[in-house]
Length: 314
Ligand code: ZN
Image (tube, rainbow, N blue to C red; front, side, top):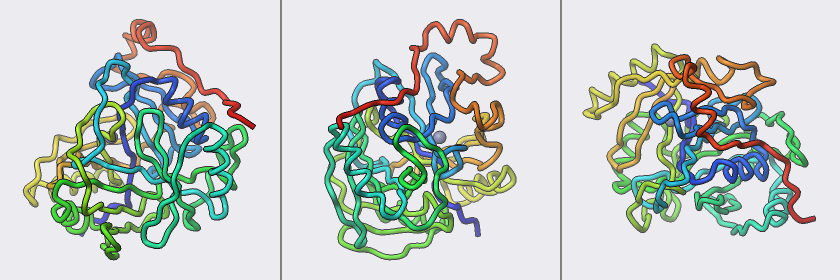
């Protein structure tokens, strides 16, 4: 039986690249680990934010495109992206959100407390304290490892067919179903981050893809050999996985699960240091070899963006 270790990355659509960087790097203190382009649409950035090295289970990625119509968060999508923060750091984060005038609410699931807020495009995010998982050594401005986001805690899935999604999580991805509380069904994987997946059993509206929504969630495969076994398993179970695609930093395949959510399976290797050293991650526009001849042309159409320290209010 194959078991995924949990979330590899989550990819979402937004409107503005600089605003996206200001929020995920500037406010949340994640590291911009890769500045590249959408391999299928090279005139659009593909930005990756994660912990210091962008380990699997920490990377959120965005396709910022100004003309993208606004979507609607609902069924057939990842509804909430959940981040893990160190024990005792909630107060730091409440103060930080206040400093940047970000409204938040405090919610409860499975007897745990979540700080819930939206990013500037409306994506639902939350922070939860977790003992497990290594500290993130990346420091940015006032955010140091004792408070820094460690990586994903997990995600809340808004499925159109919760029982079908539950079946995929348990019987295809090999996660453990650990129980139901109120309208949430919880699954766990064995990794220390990206390991807690909740299915919301009563999500409201139907989701519409567009800016401010998650495009897909990717699950971890150990290596290329295991990746091929995942593909064979999906075919055997009656899904329609894509061919295996080379995403430079990992190999990827995609399929729609029964509840309408686009799932990807991605390999842990080679990772984000394949084309630039750890110290330089995210500084330069990285292009796959087949687009390198078009660098000048692309640099001209892509907006200038940079990671910057934001002041906020004292
Ligand atoms: Zn992906």
